[in-house]
Image (cartoon, rainbow, N blue to C red; front, side, top):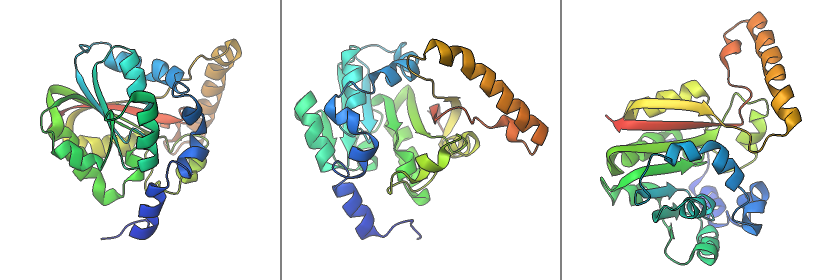
Length: 247
């Protein structure tokens, strides 16, 4: 069974994730748990608006608990997180209280809670899993959902213009996804998959005016070049998928 990293290296990187990779890539959230909330408002609000505030939600790979805190602030009362990093779980306890974010393996947690969740979130998680672990993780997510439940996945977009930075900025990244490959792997487990690109939080007036013009120009250039490149979602830093109806 091939893996991108040795078990020793991977284990050490995860053990020290809070002080190492995560501090460098997402340092602002450790200073203020609300730092990413504008991004959640722009990209996640509509994915939760139809849910009862009593809906049971779990964030797998929750890190310091920023998304969990945002959902609790939105009124959801049964939200929890699971993460492999002891430092992140300890940090989450300072902001959210003990027991809200659990230390543990996400797949094992899901398998231990069959049919219990309305929503499973995997934000910035799947890119950290070796290919041979993707389907077992998604199968566990499907098994943990209640009828009508949904899985929400966010991953870096490998068609983005700075995709190489996103792929290699974190040494625990094992795999990358485009819209097509993300749809392919999710569709093995789920009958309904919808994928969109991430949105900018609070765009400036210049960004609102100039961004569409630049996108049209680049897309037109890619169309002229051919080879199917005109269909790439190059303008989105990440991909957000909603998967329903486990097979």
